[in-house]
Every structure is written in C-alpha cells, then in structure tokens.
Length: 196
Image 1 (cartoon, rainbow, N blue to C red):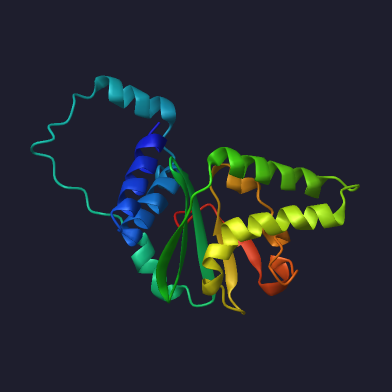
Image 2: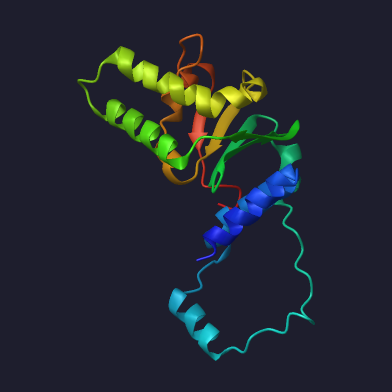
C-alpha cells in the first residue's frame, strides 16, 4: 500500500543527488515484509481500526535507515546491484566496500517490459535461435549492465536485487560486448535485499 510513496521518495532523493539516502530508503522499503515479523494482517488492521490518529506535532523523528552504510565494509567479496523501477525510469545502484554509485536508465517501463519478456520467452523455448537469443540478451546487457560495467571486478560475486519486471531477467545469460555470458565472468546470484 506504500509502494507509490516509497518509489516517489526514492526518485526525489535521486533527483536531489542523495544517492546513498535513496538507496537506504529503497532497501528499507524492500525489506518491509521481512521486518514485519509474524504480525498477522488481520491483527494489524484491527489495531488500525481502534487506534486514534497520532499527533504528528509531538511525534519523535524517525531515524533514517542505515543498513547499507553498516554493510558496506563487510562486502569485500561481492558487489550488490540493486535495481528499482521508478516513475521516470530505472535506478541502478552498485555498492560494496568500495562505496556506492548509481546510474539512471531512461527507458520506459513498457520498453523494458517488452525486452525482458522477449528474452524470457527466447530462453524458455528449446527451438529459439541462438543468434536471436544472444542479440536480445546483448541489448539488455547494454541497458542494465553497460552503465555500471566499470564497477564489475573479476573475482567478486554479483548479487542482483531486481525489482518488478526486472525479476524476470536471466542475468546469467546476458551477453557482454565481447560475446561472453555474464556468468562466464562472475558468479551471479539474486537476492530479495539486505533485510532478508
């Protein structure tokens, strides 16, 4: 129910140049269901029905999330690539013990959806033409990995945190400019986020 608000907040922070703050809020949003614990939805709704609205003038400020900052020094063998589909495009953060960087992909959600669906279909059919599959895979590599390629270091595990339609991307099968599959260059895994 808060997805639109969080996505708009993250997009606003990125426009303001707050790369780390945007990432912290994105990871916070992504981990909401994991932080919720075992609280049942029915119990939470019942509490809302009986609770009076909070007085925002006396409420304490909530601390800003800092899970990414806490994890950075520990990420010595992996590089995390977090993707967020936002109203104006797709944000891509790359972070590890070397710091945080971000890139913006100015492609419409529809174009990304079509490209991802096309590659997924090609990968699922045995009779697919390999040259056509590799061409579709290369296009997605250029869109999603090309802008952050300088942060990919041999020997590091690539941990992808995809969002929305990007969860269907077979990242291992993306083809780089030299014609190699990404999985040939690095171990590739997917993760639901830091709050798992």
